[in-house]
Picture 1 (cartoon, rainbow, N blue to C red):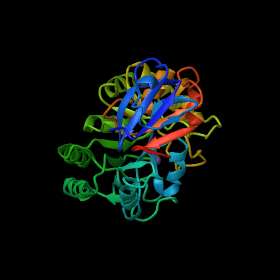
Picture 2 (picture 1 turned 90 degrees about the horizontal axis):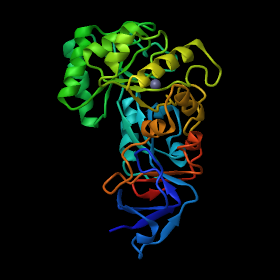
Picture 3 (picture 1 turned 135 degrees about the vertical axis):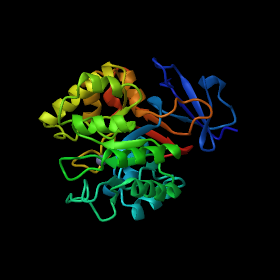
Length: 340
Ligand SMILES: [Zn+2]
C-alpha cells in the first residue's frame, strides 16, 4: 500500500548511472515501490520534484550536542552518526529521532572510551560525562556492556597519544572482543601511524578520521583496505584554509581509496565552523582524493532506493554524477516516509 509518490525526471538509485524519469512510492516508513512515473499507483497523489532523486544522505561523523540536528534534515541529511556525546543528553535525542519527523535519524556510539585522563577528558570543549575511563580488561568489558541497553551502533575509542594517555593493547582488544560479541564494530580516533597500526592490529574496523599527522606506510594502507572503513573529515583541517594536516590526510585518503579502501563521508560537525548541511568543501576534498562522483554518492548514501529500503530520500537540483557539489544544495527531503 503506497501512500505517497515522488516523481522526478531523473534519479540515482545506486549503481553506476543515472536513471531517467522515476517515481518512488513510500509505504509507511519504507520505500514501497519504484518504477516509471506512468506506472505509479494511480490513486496516490504525486509530489513532483524539480531535481534528481537520491537515497537519503548520511553524515558518518557528527556531535549532535554541539549542533542543530533538525537543520541538517532540512538540508538533505536524513541520517547522522554521533561519534561521541554525553549519555544523559545523547540517548534521549537518539530515542526522539526515531519518532520525530523534524529530526534526522540519529545513530550513536555513546561516550568515548579512553584511558584515565586520556583524550578528550582534558579538552576545553569536553563536558563531564563525554568519556568512560577504562584501564584494564574488566573495566573495558564493563564499559562496553553498560552501553548495550542504549543500542549503540558502534563503540568509540579514543587513541590520541598527543593529548594524554591511551589504553594498552590488552584493554583495546577487550573492547573489540566484547563489542564484536554483541555485533558492534569499534570506531577509533587515531591521528598518526602508531595508534592507527595498534587499532588495526586489535581489530578496530572504522577510523573516525582520515589519519592526518603522518603519511601511513604502504603496508598499513594495504592492511586497512581489507575491511576497515575510513570516515573522511578532511575539511576540519583549516575549514577552507590549507594546512599541513589537510595535505597529509588527503595523501592518506587518496592512497587508501586507490587501493580499494571503503571511504565514508563524515564532517565532524560540532568541530569548528562547518555548515549545517552537506559540506561542499568536504565533497570537493573527496573529489581531490580521487573519488569519482559515483564513489562520493556511495560514500554519502545508505541503501539504494528500492522496495523495502528505509523510506529516506533526498533530491538535489542538478545531476550529481556530473556536478557532485549539487549534494550540498538539497531541495527536497523525506525521512522514514515523512516529507521534511
Ligand atoms: Zn568528532
